[in-house]
Length: 402
Ligand code: PMP
Image (cartoon, rainbow, N blue to C red; front, side, top):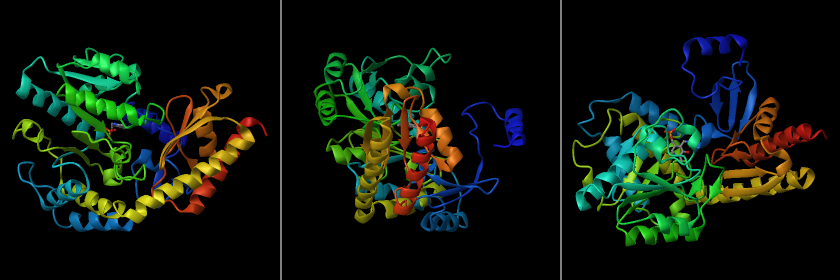
């Protein structure tokens, strides 16, 4: 980022995310260009958002076509793309009903509100408790910040909504001790993204399902990061074989266009009766048209199986980088949501790797101080995987002083 841009940023923007060193101005496939015309390989895909890479013709076409027809009319009238996208999501998943929102946080806010209201209508006010996991991230609205399991996001925003407790991730005994007939819902990311790309154990999700059934509580899967093909399955619950009552999806669903969805069963959907929840733009025609075009591509079996193959290629190269430098303690994740925990001697250095990679022309992510995170587009060409990992190796080589 040039000094001039940084000055302008500080002058006119409320500080939120750190601005980053470059300003990207153009993207195509797995490549991005900054203001100076420098090219980057994108292993971040806008934090797992651009599932089909940048400027995918099917998405650009859908956006243009809908943009010339109708952008928005009223949130008290539905529209054709919303009906089509909801129908497609219902067809492809466990869900019977869909609610549209504009971001992951909003979809989770809707899920938590629905769970509370459902429990309230069934059993009264005392059945309002939500159980979440430590390390989780569910968004930045006050309810979702409260549900999130990382203290740093809550500091200074207290009092956050009450009635939410946390148990250790993958600790079924702790969940069993915490859950009761007053529990309205348990919310879990099948793979914790921000929390370090940590996959759930199958037994944890299965056990959570059983405990929720025993206590008449709803199971919510936050699939904002794992959703829409990223794991090689349309949604990660399909990989685990454990079905939630409510699932939230955002990021990859719009391929970069802001759209999110809360999927749920027929049993719980009526608890959000007309007028109880909504937003002006949730389910707008532009977002839904893009979402539909995206699902039509991503749900193809050949695309999903290619995600697995690409992930194997990715991981094999990471193994060979590690054979040289020995700085990876664990390579984990599923499909093209890949996390690498650094060895003890490299604790806290994830951001150094990210900065060195950027200097070489590679965009990547971290998940906390010790975990490198990669979430490239699902259709990244093999040649770009190889070229990006060669840049990563150079960056690591430099940092290791070899
Ligand atoms: N849930 C998960 C699992 C996420 O990773 C994120 C974003 N990092 C969110 C929710 C919030 O999504 P958004 O930023 O679109 O509100």
